[in-house]
Image (tube, rainbow, N blue to C red):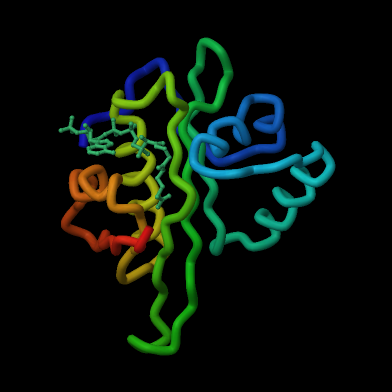
Length: 151
Ligand code: ACO
């Protein structure tokens, strides 16, 4: 796919994203609830301690420093396929004001690339029926597959 527009930057989640709106973007997806800065930081410390297993990425709008899109890849260690690895794509969300600008597709493609680099033989995700058309547009040759959750 084409490059990310120059006004945006794709990078790993960092502790300052507590102030930069990471949780606000996630609350467009589902309930986030109250998370203190302390709890946020310790969750990031946990994620960092599981290097190679958790990949939480964000797209930042450079002009404002705000997080505008988020996504996670979690690497599962299996026994099948000679102890193969499978990537699970989770918690994809784009800020309402930034939807429809191809940021969602960029997050998916970045996570699919990260999964491939990490050695995953496929990456999979679950989505609701109303998002299926989006994920079909995200398909690439590598490995990405999706299943639809019943509502
Ligand atoms: N239905 C049909 N087509 C869609 C939809 C949709 N719901 N959303 C996007 N598309 C299409 C776009 O029109 C575009 O098509 P085009 O290439 O032909 O122009 C293509 O998919 C890529 O769209 P993006 O601009 O990259 O999508 P966006 O940045 O708006 O992100 C997303 C899509 C993530 C679904 C966003 O709307 C969102 O955050 N929604 C709320 C949270 C949510 O439902 N997240 C997904 C949960 S499932 C999971 O996490 C695995």
